[in-house]
Amino acid sequence: MKTSIYQNAAIVKRGRKFFATCIDFIILFVLSFILYGLSDLVLTSLPIYQEVQRQNADSLNSLYQIVSDSGLSIYRDSHLLTSDEMSSRQVKNLVYTTILDVKDKEEISTTIYEDASIITDDTDGLYHYYVTFKEDNVDKFASIGGYGKEYYYDSVLNNSEYFIYNDLPYLKEEYALSIDQYYISNTMEGMRVYEELISFFTDLFDQGREELINNYQPYLNTLNEFEINRDIQLNMRGITLLFSYTLSILILYLMFPLIFKDGKTLTFKFMNIAYCTIDGNKPGFLNILIRMLFSLLCYLFIPFIQGFFVFGSEAVYLMDILVMGFYNFFISSCFSVGLLLISGLFDLFNRHGIHQTLAELCSLLVSKDMQVFEGKDGK
Image (cartoon, rainbow, N blue to C red; front, side, top):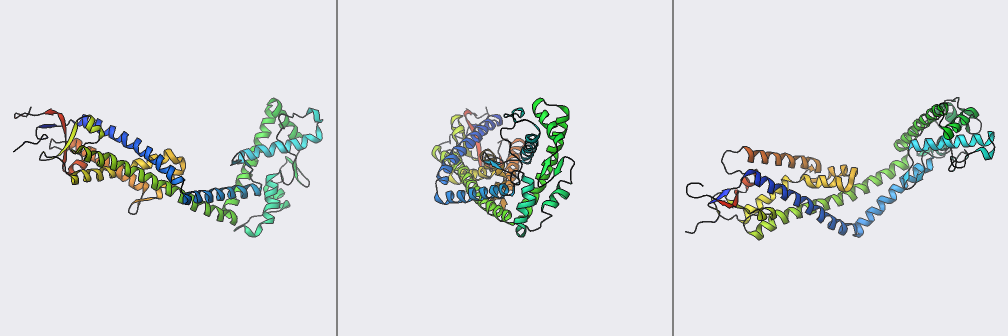
């Protein structure tokens, strides 16, 4: 009876097998990324995806428009100005409005106040929100606080000493000139007044936005539409990510081992490491299939990591995609990392001398070094 070529081959050393496994992991990671890029190109060209994307963009623009219409922000350069940016703009407009009345026009810096506007009920965002917007939309708030001119002066601005309260709140001359000097020469007193007003207005803009996004029904309805469409869009791309990962596993751990006919992946073929059954025979399809399925579970954290590369912070929504039954992306990834660690420890501490990982144990395979053979005396 002819002896199998695997019979006398030596069990591969752990370090050599670990190195080959690491190279396989890198190949798997890169291959799944490449396949995702190709799959994503196909997905994003589909009409159904483009429609979801269009609806998502429309909902997002509607959210921006609602906040902009409220006066609590301005849509500029594809984003809403933050509360800090709105506060800075508010202070500069207040200063500019006052110094127009107390300084000669040629004394006013056209560079500093290039983008400044005279305070009106539209350019004063907080006044517009509390006096105009809330009064016009009082029936659309699920829960509404005070509104109107008197409420704005008495409760929101607290009749602050910084302002003169006429038809609109205007900055007093002494404070406007002080901040103007800060703009020009960075004076300490002007800095103090400026920072106090910035902090004051930032808090007010934050409070207004908090009320708007939690109680204004059109905003809540639009936000719900946006979240639904965003989740659909991310789920479609997340499923594409899973598809690319699964296809990469099939190529690397099933297709190539079947082509090479001895369980080798690309790296194992290059390093001349082969798989055989425990009794020294060539692995069958079932052996290779079981090892492939185990590898699929062990590396399931890969698409989760790739999701953060592709989607950034939006990848947190991928956690809700069901991967294994009712287990979502995050739980499945934790499970796969745990399984990989257990498999490595099993290989490290098993006492049978054949250095099997859990994948090899389940598939009844042993990895052997086809460059090292043992004689009858075990050498």
